[in-house]
Length: 104
Image (cartoon, rainbow, N blue to C red; front, side, top):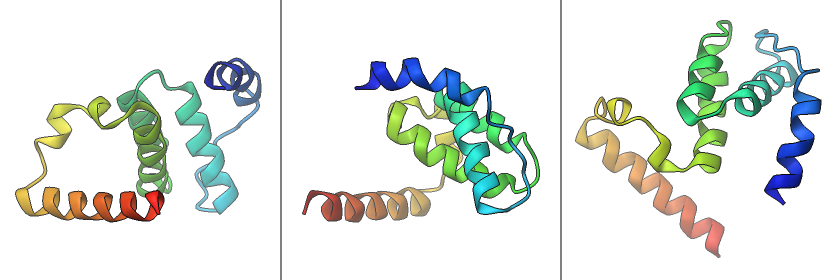
């Protein structure tokens, strides 16, 4: 499945013109463009926030999508090192709760 999607998407992505207006459709176009053009978690997220405009939303959505695709291990250690213990515990709790919901 992934191979067929990967071979199709580059044809579609070249037509996505990212506009950082804050409008939901424009934000989604930015997310998809950064995700599909990125070759790694870091590249996708950095390109998303560097678009400017609604950078926090676009970066968060790109990070979420990229995390699902590339996995937790793809997040740069230097980024993870910035979290304090309370943040890590909170994020782990949310992820565990989400996992329980998904597996039900």
